[in-house]
Length: 86
Image (tube, rainbow, N blue to C red; front, side, top):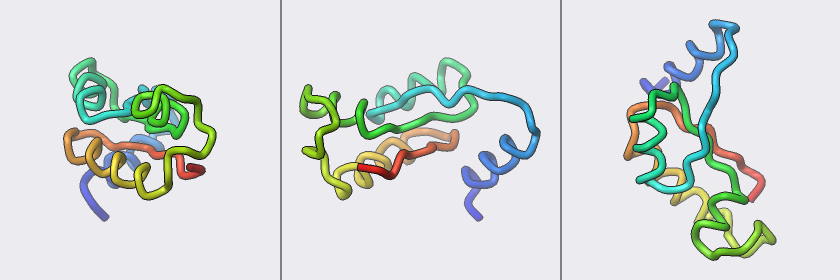
C-alpha cells in the first residue's frame, strides 16, 4: 500500500469527519494541501469545467480524468479521492 493510500485509510479509520477539498488541477491540489486539508477530491464536473468551461456532459474522457488525477496526486503529499464516473 502506498504512503498516500495508507494516509487515507488511517484518516477514514479514525471515524472522524474530514473534508476532502475540491482539487481539479495540480495547482489547486497544492492550494488544498497548503490550506491544511487532510485530503483532496477530484470530481468529473469540476475537472471538465476547468478544462473545457462546460458541464460534465461526457466531453471529458476517462483517460483525461485518469491523467489529470495522476498529475494532481503527484503534485501533493496528501491523498486524492477521485470520482470515477467520467
